[in-house]
Amino acid sequence: MKRRIALLVLLLSFGLISKSCQSNQASKNKIPTTHVVKIIAMKFIPDTLHANIGDTVVFKNEGIVQHNVTNDDSSWASPNFDPDSSWQMTVKGNLNYHCSIHPVMKGVIIAQ
Amino acid sequence: MNTLKKITFVAACAFAGSAFFNTNAVAQQATKLTDPEIASVAVTANQIDVNYAKIAEKKSKNTEVLNFAKTMARDHTAIIKQAVALAQKLQVTPMTNAVTKSLLAGEKTTTKMLKSKRGKAFDKAYIDNEVAYHKAVINAVEKVLIPESSNPELKALLTKVMPLLKSHLEHAEMAQKKID
Image 1 (cartoon, rainbow over the protein chains, first blue to last red):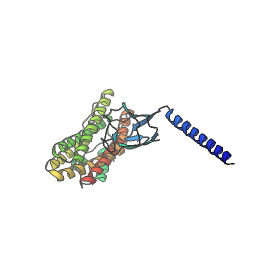
Image 2 (cartoon, rainbow over the protein chains, first blue to last red; image 1 turned 120 degrees about the horizontal axis):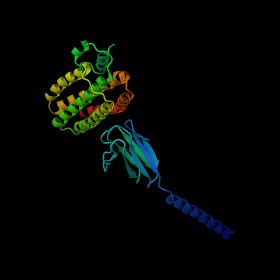
Image 3 (spheres, each protein chain N blue to C red; image 1 turned 90 degrees about the horizontal axis):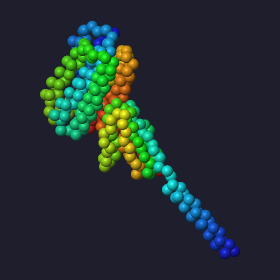
Image 4 (cartoon, rainbow over the protein chains, first blue to last red; image 1 turned 90 degrees about the vertical axis):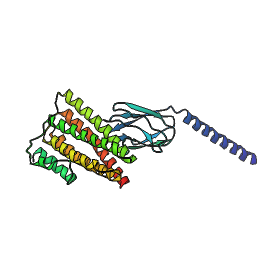
């Protein structure tokens, strides 16, 4: 009886470890995606973006004046970019950002 | 109601007693604004705010005020360039009119007032004027300039400018709260 229980535990453990490895592999194998955040009418659209770490986010300025993307903690900022131009970044984690030229413009990237 | 009276009315609703429009101009008669006149009003209104920003950049030491002034100078200069480029494309020469003259008269009074102030009093006067000025301009663009413009490209540019003006107003109100 004890042997049967031990065998069952062993099999279950193997199954769980195997599933966990598959899951980690799946996460690592995710192909980075490119997301687009448009700047239109003084808004980041979408203003909340769900993305994976390693994904690219392209900010397209479809407005009529220059904008930038500035981390809310002020640790970094993109250069100012003109209308009809864009700037891109790689997602490294969660990000709360704004345009420092127009502080009323705000956005969030939620890293998954 | 003629155009000048309409603009004066919406401006007066936005901020009674401001120097945005010269009261003498109310007495003048005006018909519906033509596109060259609208172009002139748009360029003048933008240039006036660039001029106020230049005064602020010289006189203020407050970071909030300086950042706001820098944004005003940058954005309104960009709008002037686009308005002038559109006028050239449409072969329209901006035409001075009673509204333009009224705007310039208001600028003269406000500039005198701003130049007479220093320090915190200047910062408050500049930001208070920016809040009032943007409210008045938003009303004038929305209720007069857009409805009265005939050319679709001119109408489209004025329409595109509206969210920018509204964000400037929001920014000015943010600055106003911080310096009060």
